Length: 167
Image (cartoon, rainbow, N blue to C red; front, side, top):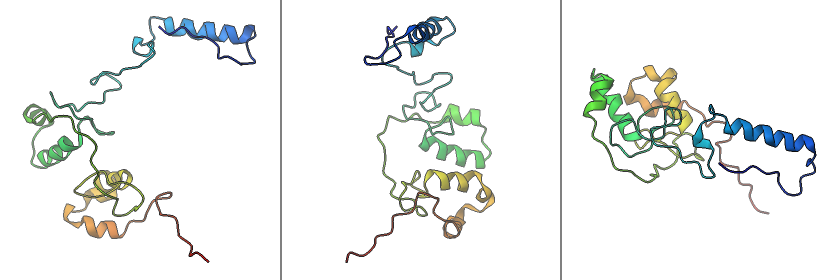
């Protein structure tokens, strides 16, 4: 447990400030407080029940996607297996674990030129990838990605700044 102290130079070193610190210390020491957060350096285990970060396939050492319990490679494999009628349980049992991998540069989003693509197959940023997979485009034939992308617009904050000519 980290001993909590008031920061030096604080002006609220009054009784109220010390009482707040004492109350916070008591709450952290309570049995209901997750011991995971009591140390100076917080290490979250790969399969933590709430903050899990590792792919759900047994033995896979890759980081899971934000909205899935699978890494990017297993997500793509699962989408194909699901379309083929395979159950998730059968897929998870048959999936081949993958070694840890470093980040991969898939280039720029084909719609938002200032955002990185999150998939090598679609070359879309995270927001457009979600729209393509789960939004109104989810019912579109996958062969029509290029046509769908032409109808999309860069999202606010994605556009490259306009360069004014030098005078």
